[in-house]
Length: 156
View 1 (cartoon, helix red, strand yellow):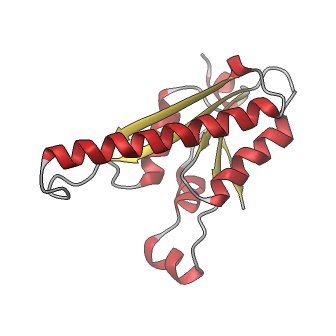
View 2: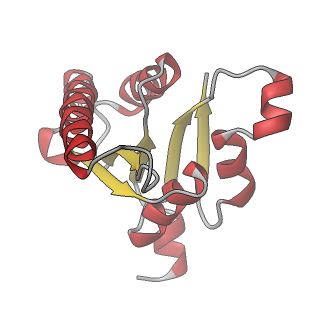
């Protein structure tokens, strides 16, 4: 695959969390591109690996991970169905959840994008104040700042 193929394909990665802005990002892609041929979408949720000493026992950690994964699987499937209802072929919409250590959620999303050939990343704007963004940073701002060789859509 050439660099130009990676830049100008119709593969889209939608990174979501449980926020309303993520739901709007999925809805935007559905309304904007649903029914147009050739687009392939992957809906991604990164599960941040809890710190080693966050849970008192490994059994509690496993229980939390199972419950969280069930909740995320539901969220991913609802998002997938929304895209299908808006005109995407079921074969063109995939879901992915990954458990990994994330020093920065933006880094994890960009790392997932780098593993495959997505020319566009779509994220919801994080609903934080200007002062919180200044202190802690914004995932969407970091993705815009550090993404290379792709387009980034930030949906509010």
